[in-house]
Image 1 (tube, rainbow, N blue to C red):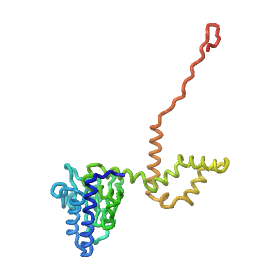
Image 2 (image 1 turned 30 degrees about the vertical axis):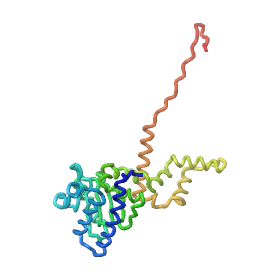
Image 3 (image 1 turned 135 degrees about the horizontal axis):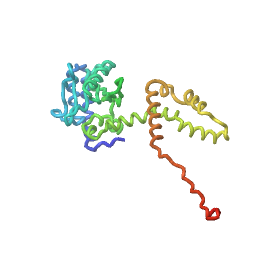
Image 4 (image 1 turned 90 degrees about the vertical axis):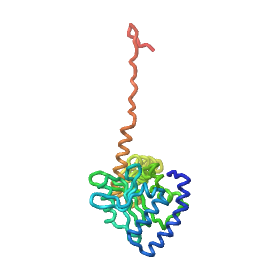
Amino acid sequence: MIYIPKKVTERLSKTTGKFQKILKIAKDRDINEADTVLIVGDILSELFGFDKYVDITSEYAIRNTYCDLAIKMNGKIQYIIEVKAVGLDLKDNHLRQVIEYGANQGVQWVVLTNGIVWEIYCIKFEKPLDYDLICSFNMLELNCKRSDEQEKLFLLCKEGIEKSAREDFHERVQCINRFVIAALVNSDAVLNVVKRELKKLSSGIKVEHTEIIRILENEVLKRDVIEGEAAAKARSRVKRAITAAIKKAPVIKPQSVAAPTEDAEGKVLG
C-alpha cells in the first residue's frame, strides 16, 4: 500500500470528477489531437499537481521530432507523454512511438494517453530494448473513493514522483503477480512442502516432484501463467532470487571436537 498525503487524496477526489465531465464532452465532440493535448496539460496541472509554467514542457524536442508533453523536475525529464486524439484507440504503433522517444532520450518512464485511457511504461535499457506496462486506467471509469485507484493516479502526481511511488509500485507489480506466484508454486521449495504434507495425508506413500508438477500444470494452474514470455520471465526471476538467497545464507561450519587430554602415563583425563 502506497501512502498518499491527505492533501493529495483531497485534490484527486475533488478534481477527478471535473475532468471526467470534460473528457466525456470531448469524446462526444470527437475533438482532435491538439485540443486533447490542451486537456491533458490541464489534467497534469490541476489533477496531478504540476506547475504548468515550470514542470510541464510542450513539444519537447527529441532528435528530429517532438513529443507532445514532458514532465521536467529539477532539470531532469521524469515522464515523456505522447497524446493521441480523445476518440482514437491506443495502438501498438503509438506505443512503439513513445517507447522510441524515451529510448532516444534516455528517459526510463513514458506515458501514452488519449486523455481517457492512460498507460504508464518503464523502459528497460538492455539488449534487446524492453519495457514493462506498470499500470493503466480509464479516467472515465475511475472511482477516486477507492484507495487502489487513487494509487494509480498518485503514480503520475508530482508528489508521487518525489516519493518514488512509481518505482515502489513497479517493484510490487514485478514481485506480486500471477506469473511469479505460479513460478513459486512450481519451485522446489514449495514442492518439498507439498510433498511433505501429502506424505502425512497418505500414510507415507511416496510422491515424486514430477507427479505434483504434472497435476499443477494440467489440473490446477491456468495455462497462461505457466506458458509464454511473461511466465518464462517470472521463472527466471524466481530462480535468480532463490540463487541469491542461497549465496547470502551463512555457512554453518561444524564445530571441531577437541582431542582428549592424556596424563604422563597415557591415561585419558576427564
